[in-house]
Amino acid sequence: MRKIAFILTICITNICSNLFAQGHKIVIQIDGIKDSTILLGYHYGEKKFVQDTVKMNSEGIAVFQGDSTLKKGIYLVILPTKTYFEILVGDNQRFEVKTSLKNLVDNLSFTNSKENSAFADYQRFMIEQQGFAKEYQDKFKAVSAKPDSVKIIQDKIKALDKKVNDYWDGIIKDYPNTLFSLIAKSMKNVEMPEFKIPANTKNVDSLKWVLSYRYNKEHFFDNIPVADPRLLRTPILETRLNTFFDRVLIPTPDSITPEAIKLIEISRSNKEVFQYLVSFLVNKFSTSNIMGFDAVFVSLAEKYYLSGQAWWADKKLIEKIQERVTALKPNLIGNQCPNLSLPDMVGITRKISDIKTKITVVYFWDSSCSHCKKVTPELKKIYDKFKSKGLEVYAVYTQGNQPEVVEYITKNQLNWINVWDPAQNSNFRKLFDIYSTPVIYVLDKNKKIIAKRISEESLNQMLELELK
Image (cartoon, rainbow, N blue to C red; front, side, top):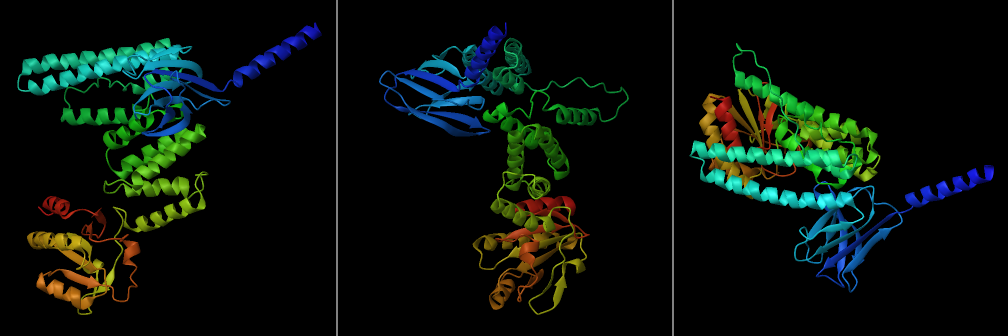
């Protein structure tokens, strides 16, 4: 009995070893291509990367294989024509793919991968539904002035949405715990409940908006397991993140920062997803053109990079991030403006804190800068328009040629406060993050920064509201 048990143990061990040592082997056959190089790529967020390169033989067959398993996700077979089709690489990584160059998706078939066969059917289904959606949208525009026709089109669009959602539900039911079901579930939007509004409520629409906003914010990721690393190699997670931060949340740092931290903390259970989310969100808000979002960057950078939690970041990257945080922190929106104290063109010291107006514009400029030559006259028009209503401009000439700038000021009648830094010891470049000109900061009556790096057009619109 002991000998039999021993033999069984060896057999089971060998079977398990073989299963886990299978690696991957994906055989690709494409009619219409031979003796050409094809690529195996993968999605990583909204970017695409190459995993492997293989030469097809004279029969149009190529084999991507290796001793290790591939990281799971949606992969792309990229042809010499720069076209591609998608396949799923999940638990089963040994299968065959056949298609034709004439129509890659329509002719797509698989051997030894039911999941991929269903995925191919899904791709064909979605192409068909997208065609219907475009048709309905075009018809909707054409009949927008006819209420009855609009209602008919709207009903068709709702029916189409239901059809797609039912298809996703079928995938989730028929392929549980697979990459395919994960993708289907992640595509589904969270359904908004019917909110019960008391009959005597004033501003019903406003209350409905608040309730809808809160629900959407709290449940947006209900169908998306953020910490699942398989989502990294699909375009789904990054698309959802961009939708959440760009379209769902109120676009203020106070709204965005806690939600970003919440998602990052959820991802801690998987190191790869944690690294991706920290890197993605810090980069997103460090490069955002939306005013004030640099505060989100500063908060995330300090919490994760500068605290030593970003193990993947080398010394050079940490130093670069520290440099940007140091440059941005003194001039974040909502901060008290650094109190510059600079001499004007006749040597009288002028402090920002001494200006007693409703709005102060701090304008960094150079009389020889080509962009400044366009902005300065427009700012002068704005100044003349709002000066009597409570506007002052504190214009900081950033260079050192005083005779030249005095001539320019006189010629263009720039009768606001003109100052400069002849000794270059005020540190204004670091305090206000000045690396080019022109730059406009806007301060309230308490000299808190309420806007920065805005155009003269945006400044004019802002002052129309602030100085009515």
